[in-house]
Length: 118
Image (cartoon, rainbow, N blue to C red; front, side):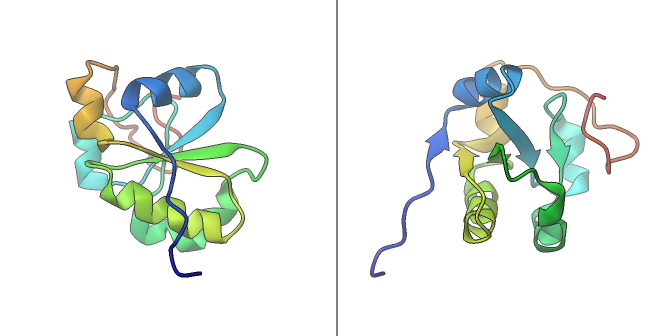
């Protein structure tokens, strides 16, 4: 294929609404120190560097929406997951845009292996 299929993006507001309705599983691919700036409650925390070995933790029956700081790493994560057969989206502008939109975030969990805020 000459051109790769573009990853579909969601605005932060669209991602928040879909996350609230449980239409998507939100996965934060930032590095652990970045989580101190705030994470979305209920998000799954998987740094991009760990994603290849942790893809098995993601449910194949759900759409996965990836988020990072600015939107670049979430697109890379979405491409990796799409190659493995997942239905994927990327949150446009990442957590930077999320915070600018005034959407809620919380402190990261002490045990980052569990979803945030649970």
